[in-house]
Amino acid sequence: GGLRTMGQVLGKQDRAEEVITYIDATMADLERRTGDIPEAEQKRVYVGGISSAGAHGIISTEPAYPPFLWVHARNVATGLGTAHADVAKEALVDWDSEYIFVDVGTIQMDGDGAIGELKTDAALQGLAASKKGRVYGVLPYNFYNTNYETVLADAYFIGKTLYPDRFADVDPVEKADEIYTFFLGKPVFEDLNSQYKNLGFEKIPL
Image 1 (cartoon, rainbow, N blue to C red):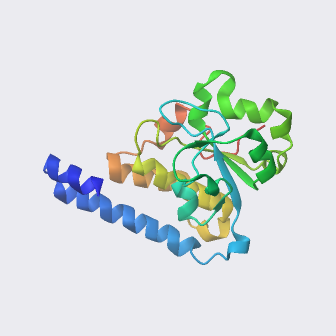
Image 2: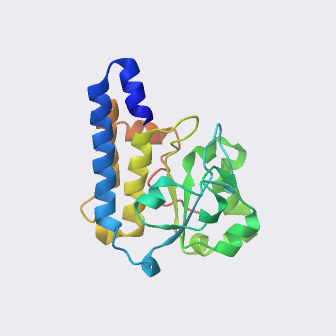
């Protein structure tokens, strides 16, 4: 796909192949950990505040959010196609997912975007995830283009959050830095997260 073409153009075919192999192996590990979860036991999840050429609020979602697919979580917005979508707030209330993940890029908006909305909007305060403290921050990966390293790191954090027994040997921050080191040559999780008030890979207090 795109990585191979890019590799050929840059004369770095070997590195492109290495990256593809690494991504495949990482996705295979996620599949090995979660592939046999019966549908009835798959957690119902929503991701809001998805960055798309800028910061967005709670209704901004990704119906085909890759980390949910890779760890076999049931994305409540799946029916809305594959592209970035804005959902009606009523839909969020109807779906009432067990967990809500928030792209922490949302805090670049006035009033902290999706996080502010979850704190102040009465309808959203009534959500099961809000009441049970099951709202978590994930790092933005598609502000303008896809950062594979962050989307993979997010998947491990989400997997660990939803299915802790299947990720018992994983520390999501360490795993993120292992992934960043492979892609970027250094562990940058802390640097990145500090740009978002360190809300990534954390439970968000409402």
